Image 1 (tube, protein in one colour):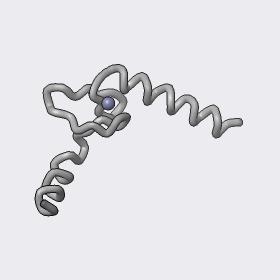
Image 2 (image 1 turned 180 degrees about the vertical axis):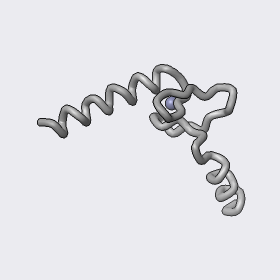
Image 3 (image 1 turned 90 degrees about the vertical axis):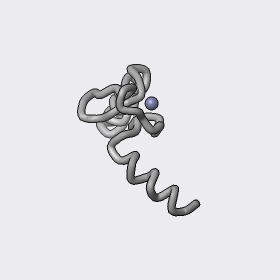
Image 4 (image 1 turned 90 degrees about the horizontal axis):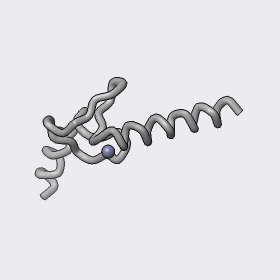
Length: 59
Ligand SMILES: [Zn+2]
């Protein structure tokens, strides 16, 4: 079981949605601003979170 998990992790590097951490299949990935997302919805969420973090850092 443990060996199987390690192999899976290696495969997922650079291949999962940075917002929800879901593993992505090549056909389905959504590439924006140097990161992969599962869809436009996750990309929008990430952009909103980044904007919020910037606002809090500036305040
Ligand atoms: Zn996602």
